Image 1: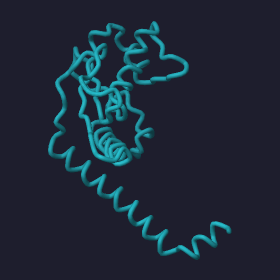
Image 2: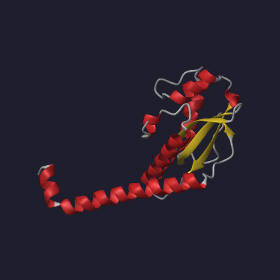
Image 3: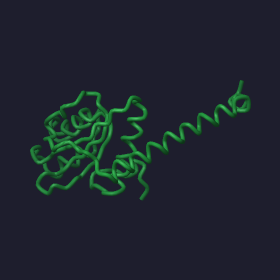
Length: 163
């Protein structure tokens, strides 16, 4: 049976599923907007040489700042400790990200100031029952923050932000 036949036979079901997916996306975007506009409850600042005191697989958003100017240079999302490890890995690897684990913002951080103590991060862990919902919400929050603040080391097209 072709996709077209399946669609014709199960059109209403497909429409309901698509509507459900679109509703979930709109809900995620709306929740992200409320979280960002009401103020994200960020953790305190930690050195990038340190892990956040959360589980290794904890999803959420994080921000990196340059301590001397207190400027936020990057927002990211995903498994928080893994992502911070990738940035710190640039220092561990002598100034370049590992070839099997590229980290453009880590490269930019090192190029700007190779003193690792001048870099800090804070995070907001998001713990929803559904991993896909957590990921979607994290991505939506990151997109709003990058759109609002335009940090120097974020590639806007990577977050879905239009110019």
